[in-house]
Image (tube, rainbow, N blue to C red):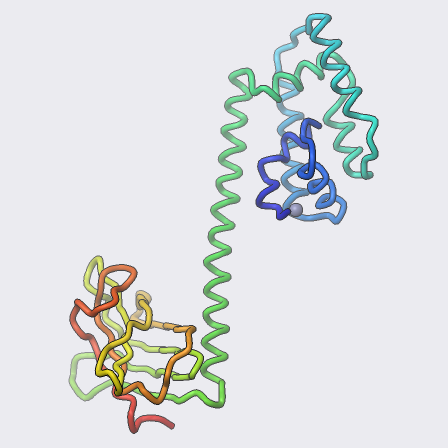
Length: 268
Ligand SMILES: [Zn+2]
């Protein structure tokens, strides 16, 4: 099980109410000092401590107390790892008041508990946000890696274009064509019309058709990098073209052509 799927179980783990494979998994993650699960369980333990200190000092009715104590006692005589047993001891100070606090926490009673849960949600959300950010960075790093591989491959053909003779700036850059894909690196791309994106097309020699080859957006300074990671028939490409299209791209061109780069005769 990965940390992601264990995330919602940290509190239950700390409170000792988690059963089955999840319990074993979290224990295993803690044992190998998994940073995410260790931090998560720590957070849950801090939460439990805070809850303990704000819970109203109510005396549990006798039968309830007995019930809770029995539950606690039944849950304890298992084999625990060193760390788990420490968490266990912290989560289970053996007194009736603490046991009642536990009960309150486990069933989410009390306004204070509600607000703390809210805070916990916020914490979890910001963790999810940073995970998302990390995913963006990872996929960008992967794109650079793929680009580098295609650019440096010996069988790749380099096609240069721009900047053109006209006074108005035209995109200029290079395209590296490889049987396994292509990379386009360009500068001076004007921003696409509002609500549109750029789509690259492969113009075929054989079919005279245009094959969609992915969408891209230039950055604020007009730079663009586009990687197409799929097999292409390099020898059948007569030209590359770029048009502006709706977000996500289309199968048949609808927008204005921004540039055309003939491939024949411009290879290295
Ligand atoms: Zn983990």
